[in-house]
Image 1 (cartoon, rainbow, N blue to C red):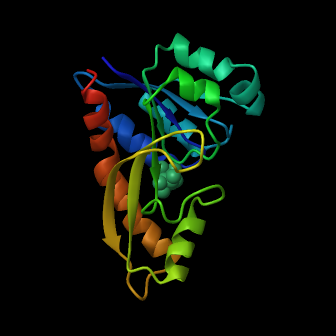
Image 2: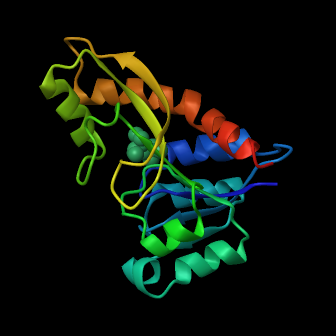
Image 3: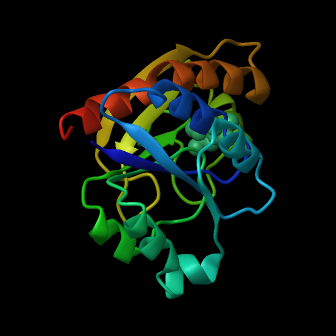
Length: 190
Ligand code: GRF
């Protein structure tokens, strides 16, 4: 029975979709929501959904191993990054080989890397004159946005799109696909 932990730094609408999708699921469960921001809205969402939460700082993530310890104590099998902005430390990557998934709100390998998050991504897509954007779900390695791609879905970018309107289109794709793709990946284990 694969047990998931979801990491999010902010709003957490994807985290919520994922938790709802797997609530009552026969073989996959979301067991923990973690955030590096004590005031992240994702934490309120998790509490409402009855999912335990953990707030951590740089020290417990990168130095003391406290986050890894907590993941172990919850017997977590997979980490899902849903709008999580920090680089995953090598120790956690080694502890979860091939078991960390991220979603990026554009078509990698374009428009990724350090500092490319949120509206910056959508603005860069618009500024570049691309006619398409979308989502990329990929495995996580020690570099930002470079792990093996699992799935992509596309949406058109129209002439009158703004970063905000494009973000909405991309969010729709995220809601449509992320949980299902996670299920495909972790289901092979279940
Ligand atoms: C999503 O667009 C995700 O792709 C990106 O951060 C955003 C998080 O949105 N990495 P939310 O917090 O799930 O609403």
